[in-house]
Amino acid sequence: MNPEDYTIVLPPADVLPSAGTLSPYRQRPRRPGIRVGDAKRDMPVYLFLAALAVLTVVSLGLLDLDLAKLIERLPKLGKVFLDMSRFSTERFSLTLLTLLETIAVAVLALIYGMLAGLVLGALAARNITPWKPLSFILKSLFAFIRAVPTPVWVLLVLASMGFGMAAGIMGLLFHVVGFFGRVFAQIFEEVPSQTIEAVRTGGASRVQVFFGAVLPSSLSGIIAWTALRFETNYVEAAILGMVGAGGVGYTILAAMNSYKLGRAGLAVLIVFVFALAVELLTTYVKRKVKI
Image (cartoon, rainbow, N blue to C red; front, side, top):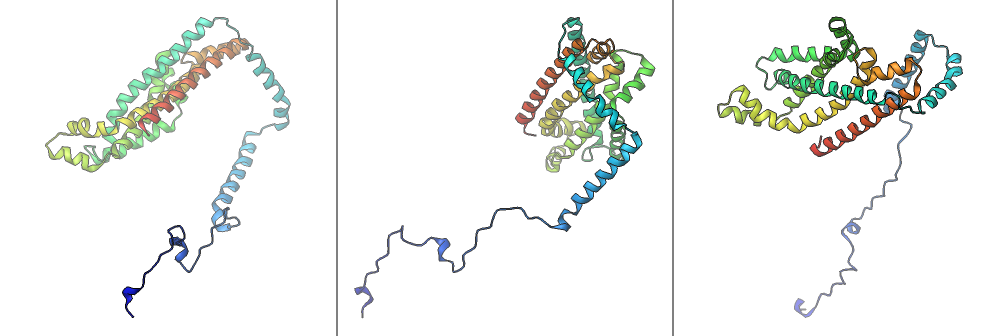
């Protein structure tokens, strides 16, 4: 029998079995769902909830809150909000002027703090600092500055400089420098070591390494964090006016103390609108620089 006398006829391609059906074992599709009842896996959640419950009970005990009186006075809170919603344009020009003062405080503290943060952040970054222990010392200083709330720094400055916008700028500047110093140091440390070594191999000095390699590689992060910090500065500057640093916060406080709730409500609305615009701007910037 000659094999050449036979012709092999294959079925059409659409009749051939797929590669998945050639296996003698067929896998069952996994049923969607969430695994429950794993006590070992859920133990951290239980511990967190238990700690939260304990802290709540201890906090209520320390504060000695009268919950009955609190519930009784809740309707008065709604009445205050209703009175504030009846906006009054009394001394509206003064409200806008103090708002501009608040924005100016936020901008100046941002600029000065960013410049100082660039220098201190470069000294604190482990990969470019001229002295390794200096990195630990500066980072510890940044942690201490950020641990103290901004209003405390403002009150300390007020005690020496008196009331006014200068005290607000200086008080806010402390926290801004601590924030930027820590953030910029972390950004600089994320620059690849190969980039730094390539510039150093060419005989560049430390300053040339910073401006030629580290700073350009970190520019997107610097822009994003600066935009985010401006939002924080504006909110804090508005609050600091209530402790004597001037600005729109002082206007709101004065209106509330004189029971001119409509005027205070309009000032709060303006602060909110500008804060929303700043938040939208920072979100846009962060999306553009992809951080």
